[in-house]
Image (cartoon, rainbow, N blue to C red; front, side, top):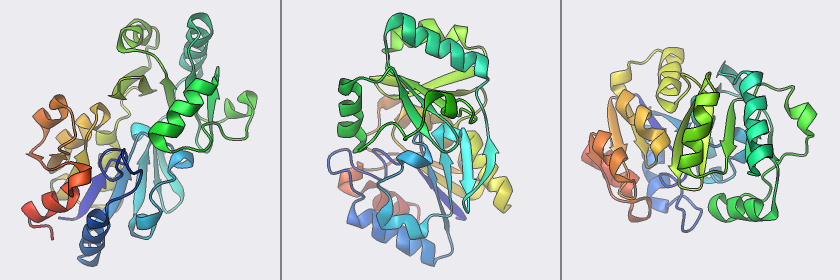
Length: 259
């Protein structure tokens, strides 16, 4: 095994404690000592990654915004920008239908049509102190936009997505969708990292629990679904481990003799 790829929320980090279980930290430390590289593959942008301090010294790179931006050693090695026409279309829908939407640039994020309720929701779900960076909308739109997260139900997503021809969407929580440039997903992010470091896809293992992890689990040499994952994720996995709160990462690494 050459590399491990981990989703964050519900995989590495518990939704209950907002922390990484001690067993997971120790398992990753052991894998690192064996020369295995460790990568994060998350829907969060870098500016939202506030919960990996316990393993920051172990991480070799980040696939962020569901594959929209890949960062290695502080350098962006791949960025899949959403065309500005599609960004403007999403903003128009947000204005017309009155929903909030997180717009994510390369270095900043902003909650468009912000409400206190939405900010409080993301604080509870992701333990974020601040959803929006201290940046104006005009300044944010000068950055390449790598992800849009409208807070809408699935039926509204189905109505809007045909109007965004250069985009695709995924959903890992019922309340919102993540919209990225077409062709950008965690699976493509894994491939980008593998090419960058020169290791074969077959020597990778990926862990996830949400709808945005499907492609990554399919692409990886071994795809592991957490016990707390929903059924469609488990269906595409090579192995279903225990939940994040029941030492699922360590158990899977032991099962596959990585440790």
